[in-house]
Amino acid sequence: MARFRVVITDYEYNSLQIERDVLRQLDVEFITAQCKTEQEVIEAAKDADGILNQYAPITERVIEQLNRCKVISRYGVGVNTIDVEAATRKGIIVANCTDYCLDEVADHALALLLACARKVSLLDRYVKRSIWDYKKSIPIHRLRGQVLGLVGFGKIPQNLSAKAKAFGLQVKAYDPFMSPELAAQHQVELVDLDTLCQTADFISVHAPLTKDTQGLIGSKQFSQMKPETVIINTSRGPLMDEQALIEALRSSRIAGAGLDVLENEPIHPDNPLLNMEQVILNPHVAWYSEESERELKGKVAQNIVDVLSGFYPDYFFNRDVRHQVHLQEKLK
Image 1 (cartoon, rainbow, N blue to C red):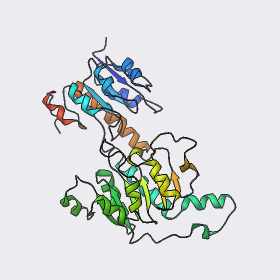
Image 2: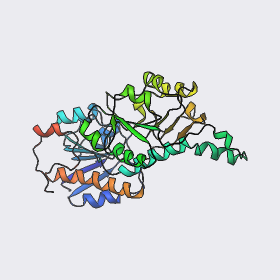
Image 3: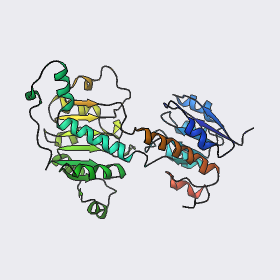
Image 4: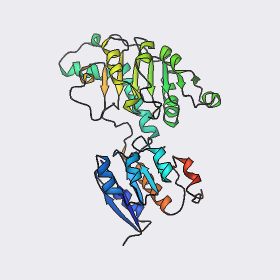
């Protein structure tokens, strides 16, 4: 009988070979599941020592039923599928992976920005309908000198900021946790959210999804934006009030949107965004490259190995749990 039991609650990858290879460092029974509900997670993982999680809900009810779990490691930067406070109270380490797709998401946000600014997708659709007329794109404005506003200034928007400046964009950022020193280091103007909404030509959303940030961009924020503003979201759909976004687009309160994430995924076939020519929609793909996927899978599995081996993981999210869980620091 294996010493440890590790359960993956759900996954959408073609292979789990990377995870299996990493977990071979320990004597592990690796159980795979495709859970959708709390009850399914409880049934699959109640006796797990470690849990790998993608989208399945790990709620307070689930956590109360975990008898042996020492670590929950989530595929991704965000941990919004996990009740982190409940896990901390139970003495369970929550881990993630904060650096596997820095270039990918920054590149994708910039790609959506450029596609919206130059109306690439709109013109593609016209040409494929045998309409060869640049006037269908009017107006397009020169990118250089316009303002990119970043909502959140973590590692990904810092990456995006450097790339955007190569196109001549001026960069402003809203992040209540960002120091003026960090803003100065990146040559970014630090502003409040109202100022950002009022002055930016492009707004790219990069905040983590928490109880405090859900609906961060809503009717008030859209009402402050310029009619020329384009909003980009490659973070989490619920950061924006989607109905308020739809109304802002319908009323031409803003000019367009490039969305890799939505409130509900996959998108419902009746969603009005599907019929808006000024909107580009992608299927939550900004994180992906072959390289980033391999890196993510290896690192989240290593989180499990670290904790079950008696070490704090490299990607340790709920550090408040230290007063309950006493492990060793890894040597760098």
